[in-house]
Structure formats: structure tokens, C-alpha cells
Amino acid sequence: MAANPRWTRRPEGSTWGDFGADDQLGRLNLLTPQKVLQGIAEVKAGLAFCLSLPLDLPGGSKLNPRRWPPQLRPTVRNQRANFNYPASLEDPALTDVVSDDTVLMCTQYSTQWDSLAHVGSEFDADGDGKAEVVYYNGWRGHEHVVGPQADGGESAARALGVENMAVKAIQGRAVMLDLEVHFGAERRAVNYDDLMRVLDADKVVVEQGDMLCLNTGFGRMLMARNGNPSEHDLHHSYAALDGRDKRLLDWITASGIAALIADNYAVEAVPPNPADDHEHGRGCHPLLSIHEHCLFKLGLNLGELWYFSELADWLRAHKRSRFLLTAPPLRLRGAVGSPATPVGTV
Image (cartoon, rainbow, N blue to C red):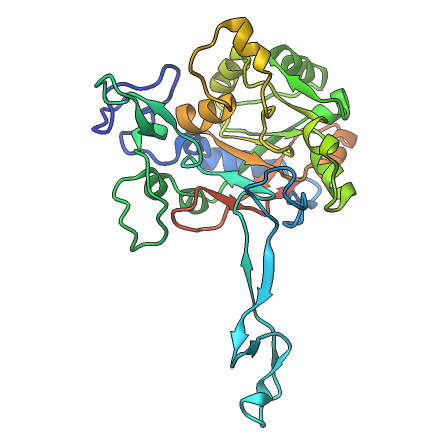
């Protein structure tokens, strides 16, 4: 474990310092050239699958009231919409017609990556007896600053922004686990025992450096509802991981996966079962245990609201579970999340 001037103690079970004192990539360090070659070796049919929803899905703001669909608008040129704009308006000799637009969108509305700056914790990293806002590898809390001129110092948004993922490029071998086949549309908090049964039943092997993808059917439902899912569809259906199961968290750690990705809202069940806190006498604790465990402790990026249905069906029909995944986010400096258009190749 490397020494780190930003912290003198690290959270129990974390990987802080394991990849270096100033590490900003976390488990993406495990996406080595060998893992890229292993992913390429899975390409046998030459078929590519788009793993993104249309970015205006799920539709509305019923899934998360703080996130709204993208707003697409034309830019302005000579005080008029720069859309179907004849260049002859500026020079009668020109024949070009131009369309140009802009978009305002929440970076985590639809198919997305969570950067390591998305979720931190209140944790006493310097051992002074007082918890402070801190993120993976001891990077400190931040103001919301954007761009190269922003005065963020060594803040988490500057150090752990999604641009690090973009530069890394995110390509390697991925493994699909098809929870939809086993649990259907049932709302189920999938615990360690459930996950092990599915891995065993489908003969799926997960190795260090693989990116684990979970197909629950949630993405298939969103496509079918075409922007108008019901409250029941969104909040009371389909499988999600049980973030309160410590054995499951321990397995995520031990598995050595390089990323954890699902087609549902948050990978884990939201909200978790409050009875768990009462039964186990939990004191202060995270609302989203997998987010804290993965993003804050392990440096393990999460992908959410991906579209896996067509690829998962193809893999099952061909008795396969592995594929080449290529999934860089936007190279948007300081962003804590990003839309993505991932590609799965088989």
C-alpha cells in the first residue's frame, strides 16, 4: 500500500493506495492490454450490438425527479434558427443549407457511466476524529467546477472526473449475466446466494479484469414503453443487486472485476429495504451501499441504464457469455458522469 499525503487511514475493505498514491483510475487499472486481447479473442461472428438506450429514455422524470430528458435545440445564426439555414441568405452565390444544434441534458439521465467523483462518503481519512467529505483514494470534496481554467486544486471532480475514463478508453472483455431469464419481471433484491446460483446454472465464469454486465429486462421494458413507463414498471419490477448483503459486497471485491454495469436504474435496489437496518442494528450507513462500496472504496466504476436485451438474447442462443466491450464516455473534464454509446462485439 503506497503512502498518500491526503490520508493516514483508509476505509476498511478499500483499495486506496493499492494502485499508487495518486491513482485516479481505480479498478480500470485492471483493463490491461491482455484484457483487451482477451476481449478481441471473443469476436467470432463479427456482429456489433448497440448497448445504449435512445438518450431520451426512460422518458419524463418519474425515475429521478432531479434528472430530465435532453432538450435539443438549433443554434442561432443571424438572429434566426440555424436549422435548414440557406447560406444564400448571406451570399446569394452559395448553395449550402446548414443545420446545427445544441443539447442540454443531464449526464446521468439515460445510458451512462458513473465516474469515481459521483459518490464519496463522510469519512475520517486524516485520523483527526472528524469525518470529512472524501472520495476514492482520499481525493477531497469539491466545488462544482468545469473546464481547464476552473480552480479546483486537487479536488475529486478534477482528479476523478469522467475524462480519465475516456482517456483510458474502456475496452476489454465483458461477461454477461442474464438475471432476466432467472427472475423475469419480478422485483427482487439479488443477494450473494442468488448470484452464485445464476453463475452456476449458466456456467458463467468471471475473472479478474472482466467487466460484469447484468441484464435484468429493465432496458427491454424501457424500449417497449417508448418513453412512457408506469410507476410500477420503474419502481416495483425487475431484479437489482442487494447492496445490504455483505457477502455480495465481499464477492464484488474478491472477483477483481474492472467495472460493474446493469441495464437498470442504479445496479442496486433503490431504495433498499429499511427493515435491514432495523434487523441488523445498523448505525450510520450509506443509502446506496454498492455505490459507496464500489465508487468510494474500490474505485470500481458503475454503468447504469444500458440496453443489453438483444445482445443477451444472442449470447444465450449461442451458448456464450463473453464479448468485446468498447465503451468510452465523453471526454468532458470535471464531469461526475457521462452518457455513453457502448458497443458489444461478438
